[in-house]
Each structure stands twice: as C-alpha cells, then as structure tokens.
Image (cartoon, rainbow, N blue to C red; front, side):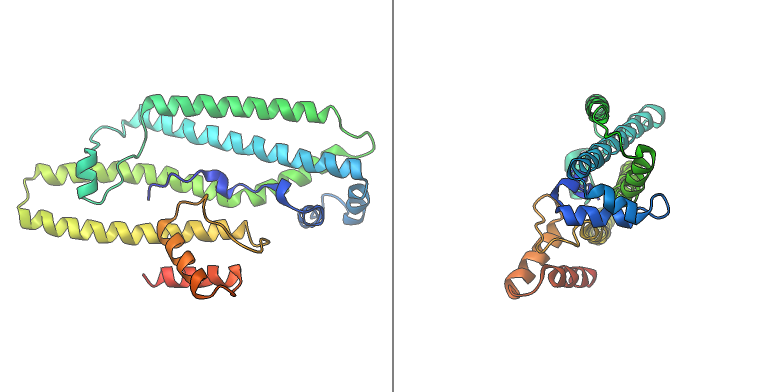
Length: 269
C-alpha cells in the first residue's frame, strides 16, 4: 500500500510528556545501566532534569534523521542499480488495474530528499553538540546517554518496522508494474481483462485494509497514554471512517475502547 503519511507519526515526542511521565519512561529503560534510586535523585534536580529531557529529544531527532537518510539512500541505490522504474505503466492504466502508481519516485525527487535529510542530520548533530557544551559536571554522562539510546531504540522500533515495510512495498510495486505490462503484452481477451481487474481490485482492497490495521496498531502503541486520539496526521481512510463512525455511535466510550472496536471491525472486512 502506498501511503503519503509522514513517518513522523510513529516518532515519539518526549516534549509532550508530563514531567512525571517522562521520568517514568526513563525509569523503565534503565535496566542495569544505572541504579533507579540514583537516577531519581539526579532527576529531582530541576536543571539536570531539563538538560536530560532536552538531550533525549535531540538524540531522538538525530536518530530519526539518520534513519530517513538511510531510507532514501536505499531508494536511490535501488533505482540506480536495478532500474526499478523501467516498465512503470501509465497512471491511467495503474488506476484501471487497482495498482499503486506513485511508487519509487523520480531520481530528482529522491536526490532532493537525500539532501534534505542529510542537512537535517547535520543540523541535529550541531544542535546536540551545542547542548552537550552545557553538560552538568556532577552526572555520569556515559550511563545517561546509554540509557537514552536504549529508550530511543525501543520507542523507535515501530518506526523502523514501517520504514522496512516501505522498502518491501517499493520492490513489490515495481514488480507488479512489470507483471501487468507483461499481461497486456500477451493480448488477453476482454473477458480475461475484466476478470483480472476484478481479482486485482479485490486483492488491492484486502491488502490496503490489512496494511491500515497494521499501521494503526503501531500508531496506537505510541499513544496508549493519551486520553483521546486524533488520526488527522495518519492517512488511513478506512480506519478513519470506522473510528469516526464508532465515535458518534458511542460518544461516551473511551478512546481505547473505540480503537479496539475499530480494529475488530476492520479485521472483519
């Protein structure tokens, strides 16, 4: 499924957590890296707490920029080495056969995105370097940074899965275009074309809802602490429609309950 959703919807935003929530989030990621009592004592110092919180968000954005640069480097290298855009059918034919048309993007656009994320990474690194100049002298930064890296690694897990899914879908979409082109080169009869279109449409719709459910579940995992949900930043048409319909049917239901009902109903489609 081609989605134009910005993958940042799967990026945790630690600035939106309350002080208590952020503290608890750090405590759950400490493991054996740092004694929790010692960490609580450190976090109770306001200036250090603010420093660590800002550091966490800076490392979070830095790692995200790195992932995005790696993602677009993959697209670029794949296009250059395997010629995945050869055989792309027209938009009209893609629409008629229930296919994704906008896969792969152009070489020019990919180069633009590569440059954009390279610049973002460099700016994020500069911001981190500037922040580290204000490191408090009375804390062990090695343990703190390792703890934050563990937290980010865990919280960006769903993001990494989504980026890997997009890599896979790029290859599958390219292969689908090649197969469709080959099918029409065989000069099929109109009845065969009609039957093929019905099958392709059914498969396309089924795969779309399966992918929407998977993405919605990933998104929910990052928003379990929220008292309400808004899906405006997540372009999932079918999930959005079901969620809104259920919200009006049971306005007193909790967001979590409506989300569970949404998944259950979508899985029945």
